[in-house]
Image (cartoon, rainbow, N blue to C red):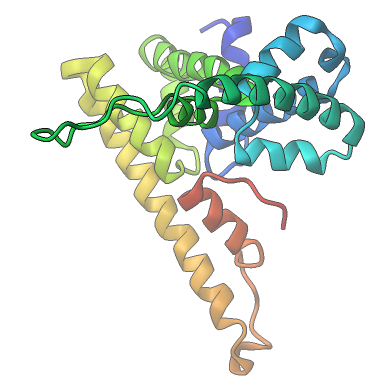
Length: 239
């Protein structure tokens, strides 16, 4: 099948050496989103309006802080807090909301609590990642249905993390219907074989700390811990 522009990132991920091609794609999108957030864009009014409204989740605020652009992040946090103060004061002035009566314990959510829940559920960086990643999932199923060579790549990959295995399994059943069995067979094979492989590497990594194994080879266990974290927690970490 001829390569198309939108299929390149997915094909490249499955041609790579990652413990989870989707973690690799997510990581690349995430890095691009972080770089965009701390690039010249934070000085543009339309982007600042969105960051003021959405803020950042705890994961991405740590990543933004780690990039050392303290002035850019401080400017975004300052205007975000300005909006928060205004909105929270207005919500708090509305009081606790509906209270339960004598015969009813049902109460409405206080406006200020509702606002806090809304703020905590949004993130500017997540908002840039999600639609791109969803398109990559769409492309996976497009390639699976259209490109026999891609099926070979999936069967030969190093499997998936727990989260992305579950998503592909669930969406495969929904999208492929009666044709899902072929995909599920491949998913199960590569997932369990490679999870077991990484687990065995992790076991040997632990055993190497026993003085009796000091002179024995590490085999493939030196980087077993970060690979185990990828498999179980969907995180790509530095060794």
